[in-house]
Length: 583
Image (cartoon, one colour):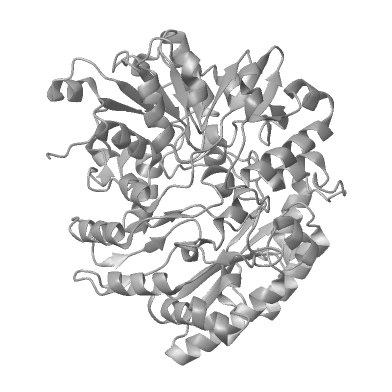
């Protein structure tokens, strides 16, 4: 098969001899044809199904809208995504200052996508092509699928489906729902069949047809606007259901209409995960149109990395991964991963260093519940906190073996693990547990061969109450891991450092607690250059607390650092460049 980029210009359509396009994907990022970029993955998934797909990257939304017209009208639908990031997170710092760069744009230049990009693009398309269905997806749409608190406007917003005027929303990882929708849109009465699709959301005026499924009825958006507590109750219902392996339909009233969120697809099998890899169909590079504009920083960062699995059962309060990718882990086969390594070795830019073999959390590969029936209805947000679930299978041996196989391949000089590691999973309670799960072997392998001077882990804080609200293990666990890491360094004759990721201004954190965090990390001689301010992003537990001022699960009041002055004070403890900060 002769590989080529998906077309992004009329000239490329003509070169391919296409007189029509089935689907056009409008993307807030520059077009990078690589498995780490969502628009490319969805485009290639549809292409493999025999459909003609074009990409419209970073169209100009501020002129006469000619970019939205240049590829014509698609036969089936427009797909819209803000890109690999929420456009507001992409544009603004935690303190709402406009960023001067954009890692997903050629040359790292800012200003090539609008605020609330999904909504802006979708509205323009509905204005120009009112009869063509618009499907929105990606992280921005996924995490705004229900009513949500928007930090940047400081308002409670409705589902992005309402604001964007789109027809359908795909949430989570979109390969399976987008193929189902592609089939559906070929029917003249496609709206009548939306109920047959999983992992989508849409507006319906008749909800009687869902009664047999016993859907979860949420408070209406109007009720939430009148009473914050209704939003808190909705959040608990949503998050509790999304933690389960098998979920029900969610319905939220909007006046006389209803937002319907269908349950997700089952956890992807190994065979399905292998089919999603698509590296062999891709150019694994940015489109040539960007050559004169400079490198795309996000691609430069990940071009030598390989994703082995999806999902995370860590359940951190501030993280969107479990609500987007799911709590359950879906892993690729060794054969698929090794085939991608072989492909990577042949690429002209590869110099022998694989920068990551991982996923959202590197050491969750192939992990799952021992008894999956117990996971079907388990509402726990985290399998690790407050205690590691006894039903969790967390064998690290397959990872040790796979790392070694990759490292032994001809052409591979070095493999580092760039993804985060859940360190509490590497603290066995007994020799028997260590023997069964291989935690010590894994730590030895990492320290001895796969750390490039620094290993980054995420204790996030030192205060017990703040850590509880973050759904992170107690700081004692981090100290225990730090000791094990240092001992392993000595055994291996290494002089490597453990770098902690830390968060300030998180709900529950005060200036005094940040001062104690600073004191403890200095006492432990830790480098603290990985400190960030908490950013409330849509639909996370931390954001719900930030908006409500209390924990929606128990109703207890939570301290919130809302003023920029207090947020700056908390941040200042780690940047002692002025007399004020040193004090």
